[in-house]
Image (cartoon, rainbow, N blue to C red):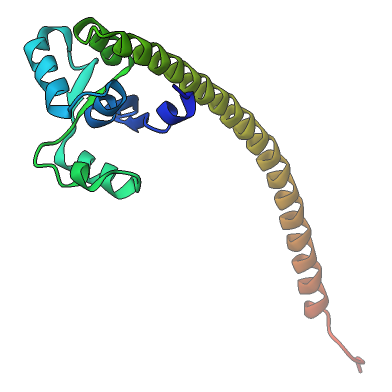
Length: 169
């Protein structure tokens, strides 16, 4: 399966990369209710750092930000479950078809790519921050020099204004 398709289904919710239950069900080619039912039967395998249910606010935000959601998902009466990378990995222990195994391998690879991308962005953000600090210091120095020159100029203007203009008798 193309990694790009899976990568597009990985979302950041609660500062964690997750996949939603209906996207996983579609990839595994099972109904969402079947996936949820399997998970409910094995809840002890899914602590909160493996899977959590979205709050109403989180779900509304996902609906607002993701234009590629099917209307059946948008208007579903139940809030979806979000599976972290570990949760997706745990799904492979309860969904045992050959297709599920292949899909899981692809999903794990997609999570790795996303993590590498995030790390590269962190490195880039650090470099930008360092450059900003460097140039902020230089601009502060320039600002200080201009301020000093303006004060000096104002002082000279005051001296000229205080001096009498014209002739003395």
